[in-house]
Length: 397
Image 1 (tube, rainbow, N blue to C red):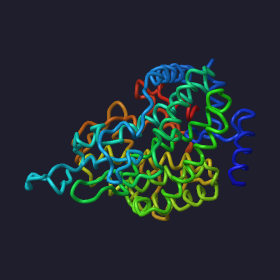
Image 2: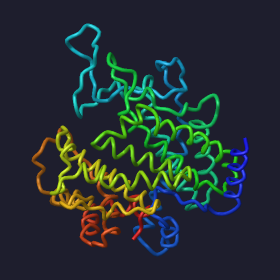
Image 3: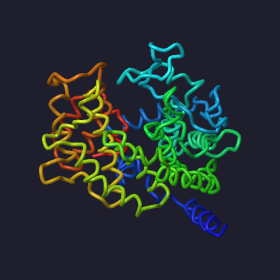
Image 4: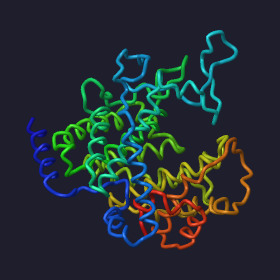
């Protein structure tokens, strides 16, 4: 009771002025820099215009809820998150299709059916709240804060619609299990939404009590993330799943003010992620075994870059972590550089679907800043739409 009283007092004080806690989805000081640069910097102005367009579209999003699915999770409680593993398909050798079998890189449409899966809803929560909260920060238009608050309350706070803070039943394999640690990769957007909530500070639509309740939800989820078997399994993953676990865990730790835990996780990621996932020549061996090897190499590099960005807030430098034999984030990026830009070198390993550059563009900007290397920025500019990307606001030059 006393602890919650202190939390309420601290949260109330937080709301008395501009945000004292940063938005961790951006580089330290980035939003303030972008806001000041918008009148004179063409790229920032274009990105801000695109952000406002995104925020306007987000106003039309019906607040997602785990209660919107038709099927019940194994617990019998719709408040529990539920999804089916995307790369598993019915077994053609059995009458009931069980147990499902893996087809790497091929998404089973059943895993995207909203009557069964909360996957797309969780993703939408993160994207919607972030667009609206950033829209509010830059424009101070209350309509954005009002709708962001509705989305946050629906998913996290309202007793009738909120999600129970665990991912026990995520990415189940029919006929094998009712959920796996692997499913935690679907929870990334929830951390993004909780992080973006700080940008609503000062709005009449997001109260100190709302912020306190969101923090309380996050505390329960964070403890489950760290202590559950599913959480521990995902943390032990050697590939991109382990990296995205760290991204989520570090972001929640920062959002909850658990700086010591955030720092601990970031320090461990040096040898545990960079040192394990990247070879001396910059290849990411575990991602190269996938049927979409280029996409997964970019996807994990984005995770490593995001983690390095979060680490800046925790006082840890992952950008320059380098093993004795040369394993580093920069080595991983430099391995992929020849395959990027206007005239990329042909990728000769397996890639069963077309790749998209969106996952590597933020990395190029972040790397250009971290390593003070204009080569990465020049490569970024080869992509015609890079000037409108949100990276211009989250990591302005």
